[in-house]
Length: 84
Figure 1 (spheres, rainbow, N blue to C red):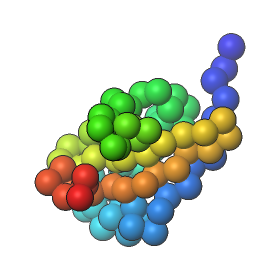
Figure 2 (cartoon, rainbow, N blue to C red):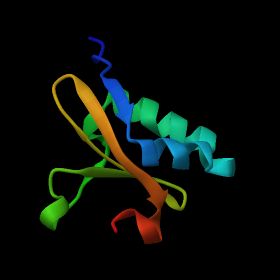
Figure 3 (cartoon, rainbow, N blue to C red):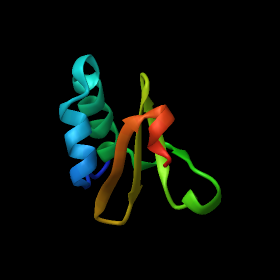
Figure 4 (cartoon, helix red, strand yellow):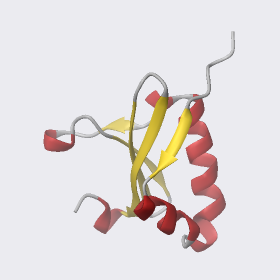
């Protein structure tokens, strides 16, 4: 049985960071493809960020949530800045 691939939408901020990530650019793209195939891949966040999940890619974090049809990437940023 094959998993259903969901559509992925990146916020403007996430898109800019993904394009400027230098050597991590391809790794970020690969992680987003993996998230599209398996949205439960990321670790759930806690507190007021509870509906969100995150995936680590080197020093970057991809923060997202998913619905039945789509995955919304809220932010891609360095760990020290991502949750602000």
